Image (cartoon, rainbow, N blue to C red; front, side, top):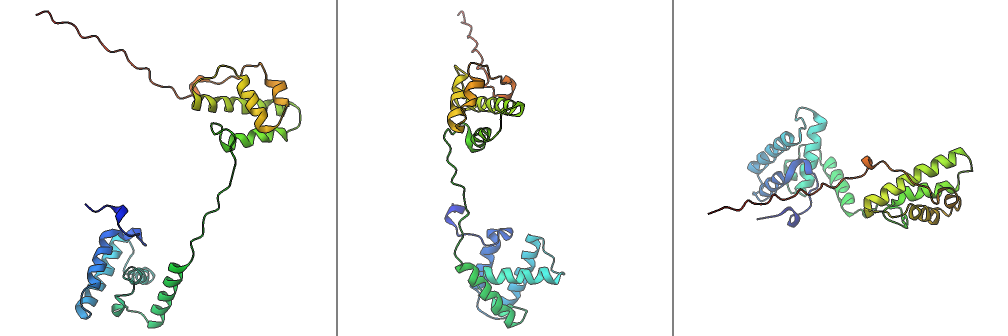
Length: 210
């Protein structure tokens, strides 16, 4: 059995691997009118598979472009447009193939405690920038609730809410948190936590009296 992991990359996934196999088979046919007819038939098949209309000139041209690229220009003898367009397409395809792949930039965000995550830890650090007042107290309470919820999801048990308070203070560098939240219960609605199914008791089999 042939697995996709052992096959080559697909340039245009909308056509599928079967169309690519047919293209390779047509490329193996000796040059001449029979192969050109097969090439034109291939364009019609590609239009049906991709949903592009052969009656629309822009779509038809796109199908021919894709066919040339998928065949590595081995079917160029059936190309219905000018040679200038063919050479331009060949040049663009070559540039795209040889162009260096740009790596996506990823933020190198340091997470002190993974059960909180980067977003929640950023909320903790934001508390230090918030001035004293009612808004600070409300935000500190909300962040503490979310921190406890995340802690319970990952660790399953918490013996003392002060653990959350100390970790929040260490992450944010805000000592006001220990002053306001130490020895105070952090309320979390149990309905918002994942509940593990309780294993049912196995029924005892009745002994048969022979």
